Length: 340
Image 1 (cartoon, rainbow, N blue to C red):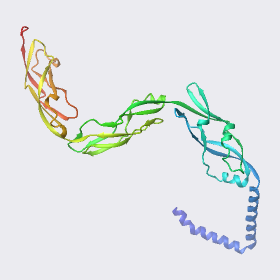
Image 2 (spheres, rainbow, N blue to C red; image 1 turned 60 degrees about the horizontal axis):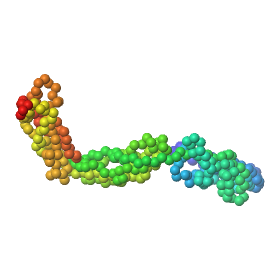
Image 3 (cartoon, rainbow, N blue to C red; image 1 turned 30 degrees about the horizontal axis):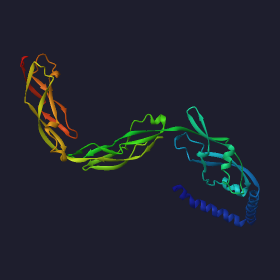
Image 4 (spheres, helix red, strand yellow; image 1 turned 60 degrees about the vertical axis):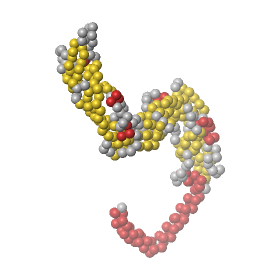
C-alpha cells in the first residue's frame, strides 16, 4: 500500500503527458472516439442475437424424512443449458447471484439397496421443478444430470445419562457439600445406529470455575458429537457449595476376625478422628456414622501380634480431610476356655 501511494504522482504525471499528446494530435483523438463508438454499436448488435449457453445452478434440499439420516453430501450444483437473447443471458455470465433452487426430498422416488435407503429424482422431473424459475424470455433447453441420488440411514434413538465435566476450584474453607444435580439427568441421542450404539453417556461442555464460595446454578450446553442430535441440548446444573468447618469425634474401635479361642483388649479403645464438614451438617454428623476396626487376619507375623493397624471401614458422604490417631494400637490377647 505504501509503494502504491508513492507511485500515484508518477502515474498522474504520465497520464497528463498522454492527454497532452492526444490534444495535440486531433486526428488520433477522432480515431479513438470513432473506435469506442463502433465497438459499442457492435456490442449492442451482438446482444440482440440469440445464444445458447450453460450455467451452474446451486441446489438446496428440504423436507428430509424424519426417521432417516442423510449419508454424505448430495449434489450441490447442476449444469443447466438455457437459450435467449444476449441481453438476457449476459447477467448470468457476469456473475449474477443465483438463489439456490429448492428441491423437496419428500417428492423424490424411494429406493432400498441392502441396508441403505435412498431417494432419487430423474432428469425429466428435475426439469419440471425448474419451470417458472427463469424469466419468460429465457428458455430452459436441457439439464446435464440424468438423475439426482440421495442416500439415508435409518435413525436410531436411545436415552443416555449426562455427566458433569468441568473443573471446580474453591475459595479456602469452601467445598462442594453434596452431589451435583443435573436436570434432566439423561437425554435422548439420535443419529446413525452405528454411532448411537457406541454412546454410553454425554458430557457437559467443559468449563473451569474459579474461587467458588456459593452454590452454583448454570444452564450448560452439552458436548457436541458429530452427526448426533441431542434432545435436549442443554441441562441445568446445580452445585451445592458451603463453608466447611473442622470437627473432632472419638470413635470406638471394633475387632474383626478374632478367633473364638481369643479375646482382645486394645490400648486405647478408641481413636480421635478429625475431619471437615459443611457448616449446615456440623451437628448431624455423629460418631456412629463412622466405623473403624482392627483386623486380626491382617497379621502376617508368627504368633499373636503386639499391635494392629487401625483401618477406617466406613464414613458418611460429603466430609473431607479425614485424619485420625493413633494409626496403630497395642494389643493384649487372652486365651478363652471352650466352656467360657
